[in-house]
Image 1: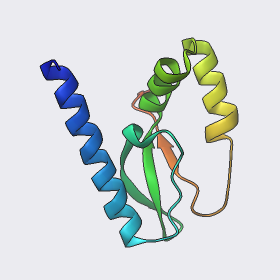
Image 2: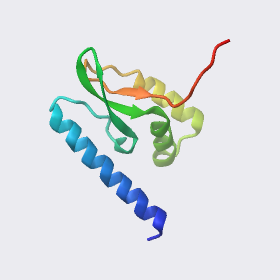
Image 3: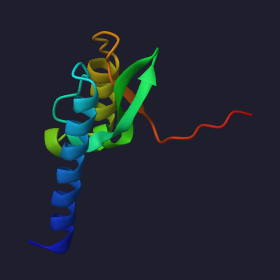
Length: 102
């Protein structure tokens, strides 16, 4: 196994441990199946603790694991993931993109 694969495994293991700790804080927290590598923490929405995901990482996972083009991954994400509201514990997806307005 090369060094970067070992680092990826360690990172994934740390993410799983973080998810378990977050879930231990609130047994009702919802997670997006298949996207544990995209969890970046937790936050509050309307006084409810919710999982926080990186939208950019979710897009990368869709491209890598589901062999989607960038356009297809964005479309799938917008409609099937971000567009799905499953109650007050629905995860939040944060984009690293910065937009400037004039």
